[in-house]
Image (cartoon, rainbow, N blue to C red; front, side):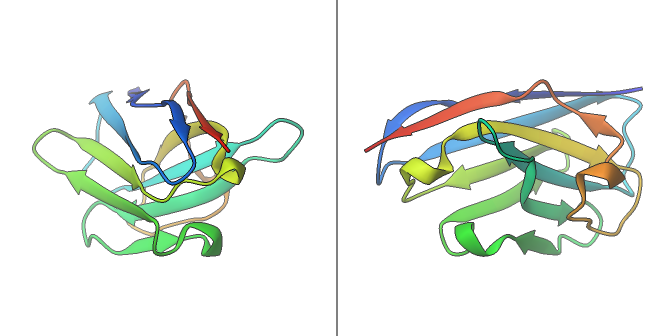
Length: 124
């Protein structure tokens, strides 16, 4: 079993920054992909960014390209999401997820493990 714990959410003004962290414990695996997803009220869960743990290759959805950065710390088994130039439309619950594959996926159905989520609220 893999346990993912997110932290770092909060309330920030538009244009501000936040850094989310997702620490993994339990039966972790080096050949994996990690993703950050978000879900706003009344909307479907969508991918924000993803990273291959082995290669470091990344993916970003268009709306966050150039503003968000996903990174990983192998020693801490932690993935981060640095969010800059935040906009009110970034407001959502952010979830980290993991899948036992080296390939990145943008589909939430292909991730087996999920954190509990952390709220990000951007005020205008």
